[in-house]
Image 1 (cartoon, rainbow, N blue to C red):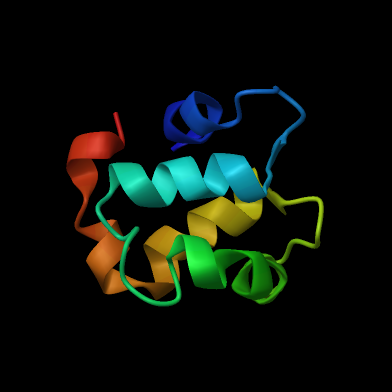
Image 2: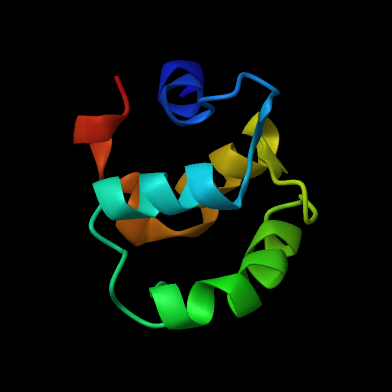
Length: 82
């Protein structure tokens, strides 16, 4: 899981910011479906980050791991994990 997080934490600050998390969503095929669209993302981002224990600056690796615990569709995407 740490390698996957690091892959998308491009700036290396230990958090996935709005752009980094969007890149992750694109990679797993979630981008393009509401609320994961260019039109809605800027409004939805803070709620998404907060739901995963983050804030406007982004989510930590711990919050990112929450995706794999709480959301079955994401946890089945093992191809991107290791």
